[in-house]
Length: 123
View 1 (cartoon, rainbow, N blue to C red):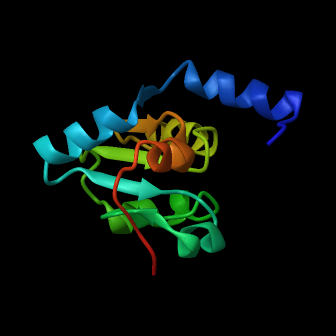
View 2: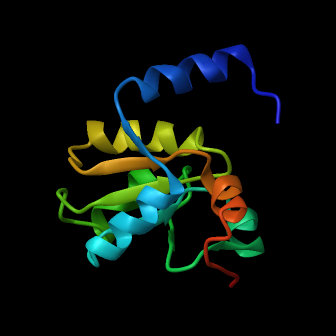
View 3: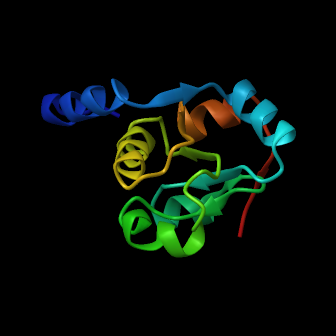
């Protein structure tokens, strides 16, 4: 997908403040910490078409509204992903601004997850 210059500017700005992890690092972190949450921030139709096994869905359009009810402990490890790693970077930046202290964005997103043959599921 071709992204606009303005979109890439805000994504790169957000990426300067967040931490990214690879698919392998994500799987290792999830295994090491059973309390960690893998959160898919894609749109509903993207989620329904398939998602990472064990992930929870909080779309980017609602995550700020619903995260505190879904994850009240702001120290919980959160690993966010989207289609390619851009929307999750923006969402990670906002969650940090909301006080979440252990937030990561998965580089490459769903595309990288599938390319790594990581486990998937469908609703």
